[in-house]
Image 1 (cartoon, rainbow, N blue to C red):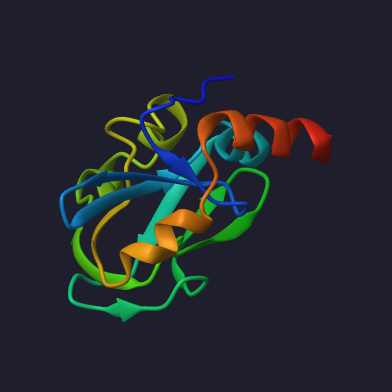
Image 2 (image 1 turned 90 degrees about the vertical axis):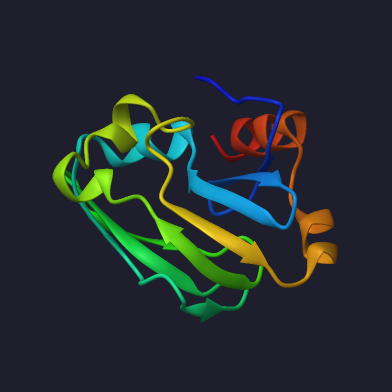
Length: 128
């Protein structure tokens, strides 16, 4: 299982990669393995403002349908249009082309509540 150390993680298994005032968000390798093969992704529209913990979309797999949650508050600046035609990219490249949304972070202090790669790895090991 891959856990890149260049990003932060939520306990809901989303990753956050911050670049300036923007952040890309997707689900972790651990989450996509729990879901199984992803067959459909539905995301909220660009321009939508959400608080940390609000759902920003759903991921449907062969096993279940799961909501995905905002790791920090912000406004969706962009969504990955590639996932409409190729949702399995979430499974094959969760940290790259499988990104879901890009947000403009409204409260950077909330980033401090997210987990480092080492903390996230310990969190999932403790949960098993």
